[in-house]
Image (cartoon, rainbow, N blue to C red):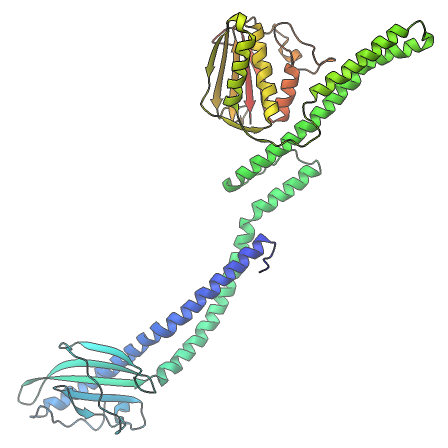
Length: 454
């Protein structure tokens, strides 16, 4: 079976099938239930007039099973031989009278058993070739001698009239159901279009990102789509991190090669006298290229981003640094939950946490503290977590915090006390959509790095 590619069309066709099934059920229910109720109500009206005629006839007779019915009935069809409305009177389970409208060859009707006084019993008789609706009722009537006798009155009608009325009602019902169905389909189509509008908004926003008009999916999306929006934003950010990292490494490489090239250019005038200098600068250029390629941790092959447990990364780095700085006897205070997940590349997280924890260990006196706050808010923006990395060292000199966050002429340039690789960390955090902040630690008195991650 071939399904349409459009989600709207799929849902619309499903709605059509449901409506068709619903209307078919309504028609069937109407045929089997409503028509019987209509026939029952009609026979009740016949019984009411027939009951009055019988009551008058019995009241004028001294005999129980013999009395004269009126020539003109309240319901005239009982006296019309061509009518399809029958009337019967039974006494002691035996038929004692039938209306002139009844066919003389019609056998005696079957009476219900155990019918209580003033109780009516409706049934549909399909035993003959032609369906008939029958209503029995047991009555207690007084004769001329004021004696009470029980009679069973029966009225019956064929299904011709009911079928005719049913056809009319079905025709009317079909027309109304058709109009209602079309109206419902139009409404459901508009509702589906409205319900799927957020998906079209995401497609439009992705096209805007592709054209450079937007940076991320930042529209107002329903709660059900927040997961896919977050994942798409994380993927877009990750790809942007990779691209920016390549650009920065190429810029570093070009900048680092300027000085050796300038020296080589000056040596070309007297190459023989400057042979050692040329070799020295060529070696230096080779070292620079090797270093920059090693820094480009994102390789050509595609890397997969996923949910990374920050707490696991911190525990591994803590274990490694405890061995590296064993002689320093650092007291680590690791106050983190059992698990805490963020959506990014594992290598980026190792570079961020490892760099800042290594700096804290390098410049602390004896204590390093690592803690995590969940769902913090900073500058009117919500983040997934806030990572604190604190130490009891000297901290950053006043006025130099912003300087160490800038990208320097050389990547390994740093400020005394802190700053080795901090510019790289800051770039990665910014590209991930986070924020790097720093200040004096209230708990330890040294540096307090605050890393906000989305």
